[in-house]
Amino acid sequence: MSSDLFIGGGGPEYGTPQFLSLKYANRHGLVAGATGTGKTVTLQIMAEGFADAGVPVFLSDVKGDLSGLAVAGDPNHKLHAPFTERAAKIGFSDFKYAAYPVTFWDMFGVQGHPVRTTVSEMGPLLLGQLLGLTDAQEGIINIAFRVADTEGMPLLDLKDLQALLVWIGENAKDLSLRYGNVSTASVGAIQRSLLVLENQGGTMLFGEPALALDDLMRTDAEGRGMINILASDKLMAAPKLYATFLLWLLSELFEELPEVGGADKPKLVFFFDEAHLLFDDAPKALVDKVEQVARLIRSKGVGVYFITQNPADVPEDILGQLGNRVQHALRAFTAKDQKELRMAAQTYRDNPAFSTEEAIREVGVGEAVTSMLQPKGVPGIVERTLIRPPSSQLGPISEAQRSALMAASGMGEKYDTPLDRESAFEMLRTRAEKAAIDAAAAEAAMAKAEEDAKAEKMAEADTPSLRDFKQARRYSGKGTTSTRRTTGSSNDSGFGGAIADVVMKELKGTTGRRIVRGILGGLFKGR
Image 1 (cartoon, rainbow, N blue to C red):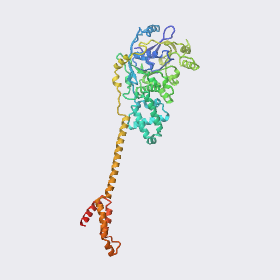
Image 2 (cartoon, rainbow, N blue to C red):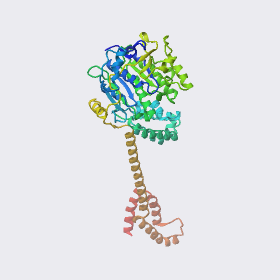
Image 3 (cartoon, helix red, strand yellow):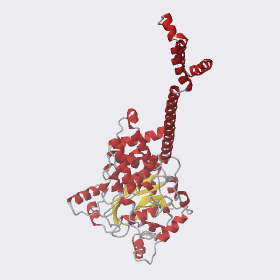
Image 4 (cartoon, rainbow, N blue to C red):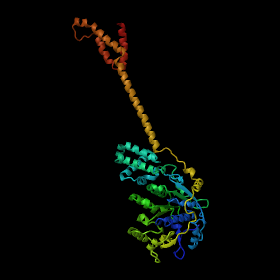
């Protein structure tokens, strides 16, 4: 396997043949150009070159054309017929038609194996960008993640996050004392954003089994790198979802992969098509995150290549880190277009043989202005280049071919069936059910206590002993009248009156009632 990827060039009208050095392939790159100028074919031939060198590739298929990498090109097809002639013209003696090892992925699980992550792995920063949240709302998302960590509640899918937000809204007062103001209005705004995300199909992105990075970094039996193709034609209808997922994947690679130092070739090459979607209306914190990842991830052995229409779509701090460049034609119809074309030309190392600005304006379909890193990482002089032909099929494959490749990939058993283990949603539901049972039990106990108290009062007011005692007191009072009159003493109430005073005090207790029943029972029996 060669240490360099042949990009194109050669021939009398073109400059020095252009090679992309594997040693510097992790210094990132840029493929730019207007629609219809050949960016997709350039991406295809670069993916083939990396795969032949044993380097796995991850790329997004925005238009559905790149699935043809899985099938060898047909020399009798009208699109492929000129390729042999072009290969000879630019001195590509190793050209041959070939199919490449491909694994198809699809967030919706239709055109490829499902690709998922968890809410926890996505993190609050990217989740806030995905939902388009304000600073205050991002603060509540951060509180949600902190609460989930503190309470030991995994956040795996969207229903976990939704359940936790409901709990936060119900306990906003207590949480505000600990974490600062928790506004129920902000919680409601986040829930509405989650509803929009669900309507865009975002529910499919979050869950388990989550994508394992090792499954993107495989090689086939012949040692060729696996080309992982993400079906993105439908995903592009939700551009924030598309951009956030790819940025999450980059972040995971950065976080998980070990340092490799000066490797002879990358461990993985990542193509970010329609890169402008990542930076459109992106907050500074997110742009800073991308810049950090782009600057440091090369030490992890990962090369990142941005595919976009205009170099101006990429922030200048990131553009300066893209050492390997393929610039297809730019159209300059307006003053703004002309200014951007001049700025694009200024980012290349000049070639005295021609004007870079004019070359970018004039190159045709399948041609480009290129600059590749040379030994010691020095930018090469800009050259006009005829891009080499692809060995695989141009255009998409059939649905039957795709289905057969998916069945043989070995990824279906691992990813096609979703898992739903216990997480925040189930834990909060269990808590709510237990609280409801406890509340019902407490309410029943309170009701029973009230019933018992009422029954006891009624029993005290209408017991047989008390009725007998009242009658006895009236009877004893009648029996002492003559005595009081005879003696003339006002303090002498008689035996019955004295007993009544003592017994009335004892009636206040249960023990007293039992004693009274015994005393009065014997007394009234004697009477």
